[in-house]
Length: 385
Ligand SMILES: *Cc1c(COP(=O)(O)O)cnc(C)c1O
Image (cartoon, rainbow, N blue to C red; front, side, top):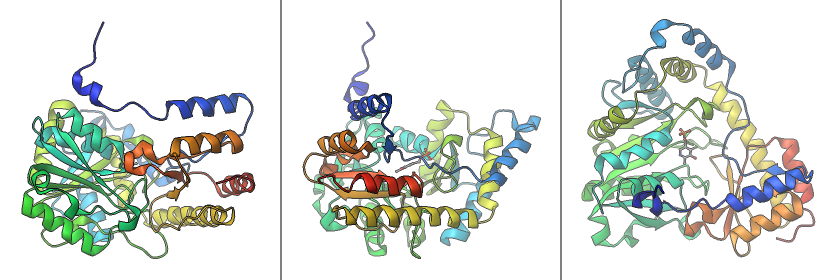
């Protein structure tokens, strides 16, 4: 009786329904399923952050409507965090906006700048929100493939001129979900110049910027010359501080782009609960050791999983960032994941769920503890990859 809008009809179907059903069936049968499918940290939010929230929630002034752009104190904490961790100078007055998780900002950005039929460049494979938010704004997504031979960086030269000249936004995400790839400095500089030349908004999703290993430090795109001319960078406390459920993130960079995003947001939401902003302030002002400890946990898990997979015959490399391992498999990724689940009770995510160029790969999330990873490797000893 109530037909969905054409724009909703264009959103691709949820690919994992069948795998979810299969997983639930296995659990019902009594199989101890090991789930490497979820990109949600298993580790708790650090104590001092929770304590800050407890104090703040009692204060009447924190219970009121927040400001749209976020408390000035929150935006100052973001600026300090970016100065300390990235060497980037942000004006908290107009170069930072609080978000209800970075997904919210990513989803709203095209509504501010995309007209019907306008092109948005989205990475394939990629976080599905770039594609979906483009369609929700009646834009057209042009997918740029991320190929292994290019270290999962897009080949900007391969984008036809008539596409690039009409593009309004380019979404990128490094360190990357799902491929766990990182962006080198030359690539970032080249991309900024590409976007400046063509007046494209460079929307960089830096959700994994702090989850790095082996001495690697992930740069902010805003560290580079002239980046502020075209760049909006999304970041989040979700992965950095194990706060996925709290729904807090931010956008920073070019003030004109930020005010466009804010104009959408003032018409849609009413900001982030201030007690949560207080918790985020405690997180970003707090000791960086909590981040380092987190990374060390993921590093150990990465080593166990990658070395274990190599031992049982799957050729994968150790990523320098993110909590994902991206593995090339034989054949169709959905068939592979079903067979893996059926025989071993292990869940991975089929690469094709992130876009057609993800076909042939599967993603394992390092969101399970070391003993569970060891058990998984044990189960894989006789599995035919
Ligand atoms: C987890 C994730 C986010 C973060 O989302 P929040 O809404 O801030 O929790 C954004 N982008 C990517 C690629 C992610 O994997």
